[in-house]
Image (cartoon, rainbow, N blue to C red; front, side, top):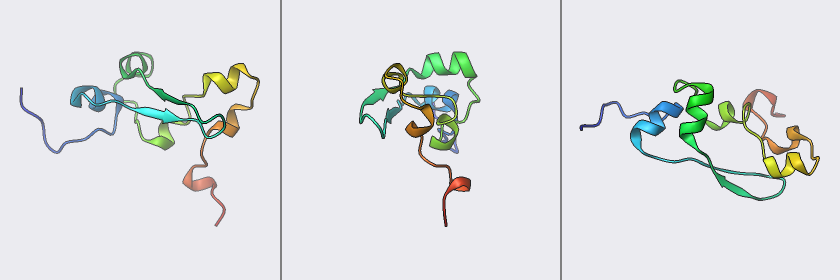
Length: 84
């Protein structure tokens, strides 16, 4: 099975096809988690972009959420919201 070019992992489906993984880090509680890409692709579709700015809108830290922490604190600021 040959690789298609240009090579891209910009979507969940692209990452699955490439056989790579994705992990996240919570800035609040400092926990790391490896994401289940197949489950995410099933839920959001294989064309869901998987760059940080795209995923920060749809995932959250379950540990922080269960501890009652505000979800908004767990996401980095997108470029359009940064102070200049």
